[in-house]
Each structure stands twice: as C-alpha cells, then as structure tokens.
Image 1 (cartoon, rainbow, N blue to C red):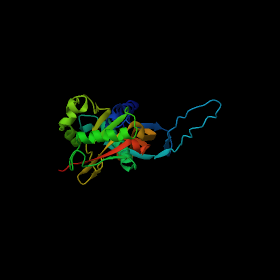
Image 2: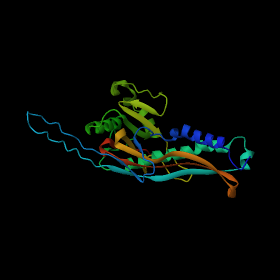
Image 3: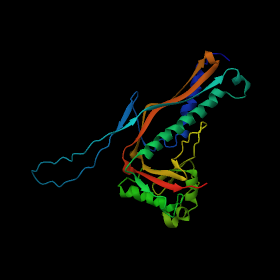
Image 4: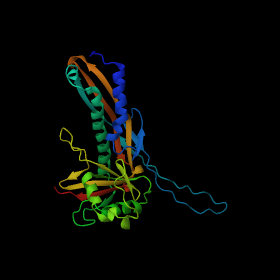
Length: 287
C-alpha cells in the first residue's frame, strides 16, 4: 500500500460520508436550517403578529408595527476521527478506511440530533404535558399524544410541519394503548408498518431514536432524570439549526503514525426560535 493515499480513495470516502450521514441525523429536514459559511453565530428572525384594521375613505393607513427580535445559534465545532494503520489494514479482509466513513458520519449525525434536543430542552415558555396525563406516573400514551396536539393547537401553531420525537420504549408504550391504534379514537387507524423512521399520525411525524450511549459513556438520547424521560413535540419553524460548515470529510496520511487519519467534521448550533411551538412531554420509564 502506498504511503500516499490516492485521489480515488479520498473521493470514495467523501462520497460515502455524504451518501449515508443523514441516516444518523434523524431530525434532518424537520427543523428550520440555515447555512452561513464562516459565521460564529447564525441569526433566525422572530417576527410578531400583525393586526388587520378596517379602512375608511381618506384616512391614513396605520402600520402594523410588526416587531423583530432575532435569536442566535452559537456555532460549535465537532469532529469524529480515527487512524488506519497501514500494516493492520493489510491484515483484514475489508478496507477500514471505507468502513470508517459509515462509523464516523453516524457519530456526527447523533451529535447533530443532540444539539437540537439540547436546544429544545433549554427553551423556556414551552408547552408542558405532565407525567400524570393519562394515568399516574405513566409512560407515553394516547392521552399525552392528544395533550401535545392540543398544546400546539391552542398556541396557534400550524398543523403542517409538526413532529414528535420519542425513544423506542415510549413508542412501544404508545402502541400498546388501544386508543392510539384504534380508528375509533384517532379518526384514522395508525399504520405502524409504514417504512422509514417517520410515521405520520394526526398531523405529526413520529420519529424515534434510541438511548444513544456512546463509547465514552456519554448519553446522547433524550433528556433523562432518574426514571423520567422528556419527549418533544415541535413545529418545524420553532427550532433553528445553523451550520457554518456542513458535514465534510477528509483522509490524510500521517507519516509519524504510519497510518491514515480519516475525519468527518461539521460546525453547527441550534436555538429555539418560538418556544410556543415546542411541547415537553414527561414520561415515567422504570427499569
């Protein structure tokens, strides 16, 4: 193996990363996204409402004076890297450099989701669905789902573009609730067999993620406090994800290591744009 990795290998690695990294970013396309190359912070506009007035002849127009109060997402740099020893790579029956493309991009994808989850968790003034809805100290159920929908409805949040994110355990609990799966209650029969990670129901895309415990012990799943997990219902325009460098990859030969260094990296930040479009749902999940 040459100590100078050829251009085709580098191109293959980069193509593989771009092809599959979105699978690790479960919330891609479900929030407002904005890219400003090189920015330290990215602003998302928050505009107030307008009042419609009657008009009589020859009277002056009264401006609505719509307020502007942008919020900022602070950029942070993230990466996932690993070495491929030039000797060890010859002793295995696969190309580790190519396989690393999948592993490293998934690590970055999980971090992107965590950035968004942290922004929702930090938001104040959101809707709240308590642990006692649908029964004392209960896991996810139909009553909590309807309460989440009602909180967004009452806040005037548009029906199009809603998502509810939950862990797999909460999703199984929801499926066990007859009121959720029966068309007698939900106006439509829930199709749990539909393909993909997004399943539509009553105007929501239901997205599930696992606990995401990393190799170093970090937990990148939904917020957990003892046995209580926080799920989130939100509207697409209520959360902003800013990138000053979208996902990119590179592979370099490091002579001092006699190894190739493969890296996937990005720079991003997230912020709550309109807390009224976010609902925090608390569920109890005992071991």
